[in-house]
Image 1 (tube, each protein chain N blue to C red):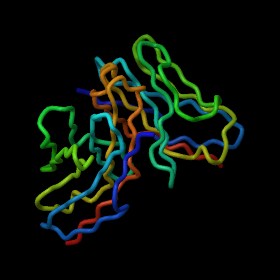
Image 2: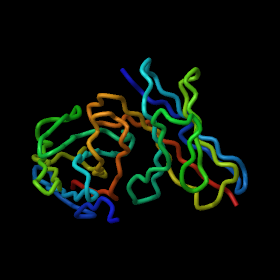
Image 3: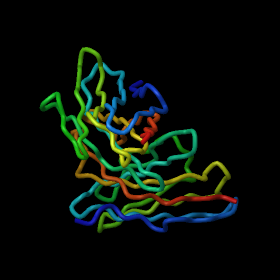
Image 4: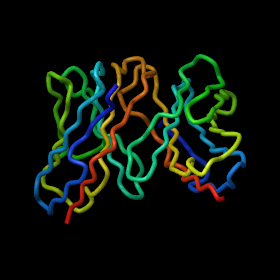
Length: 115
Length: 114
């Protein structure tokens, strides 16, 4: 069974640019989550999508946005990039999380570096 | 607010020694609990999960964890450390009716000395 796949592996941008990160979930999983892992800040929840809708978002500004496609893949868009956006962005997927007991399975992440 | 505390940002053990990584959660509502491992330049891999069945949970790579409600703990153990266990370990919780996000501890980096 293929795991969660993310692309690109690395992304280098400059301040003010826009970045798009992509994620394909495990087959059969309808929920996709995005997390930011920045140095010294731990794992911070960004967004949760299920069945094409945004279900919840973490404490991040609106320039962090995304969407989920009919095939359940997802993309994360970050506009007006700032230096502090440099981080590892992790995507995870699960079966629908209504009960909270479905484990999330993670991809290897996209390393975003802002110059 | 719900939170997860991992005692010790860095733990060092000798190869063959017991591994004990501590995790405590703060909540009056029983959570679902997970341990993940992260190797350098990789994502998180699920080690094990507690979802209100048996309180002693066995996971992959010889790890296990015990849910103790009275202590609000979910410590991770392995009887004998191997060099390949060197990695960062994260404890995480979620709740029934969850808003989707896992709440993670800050992680514990495990070093294994030969």
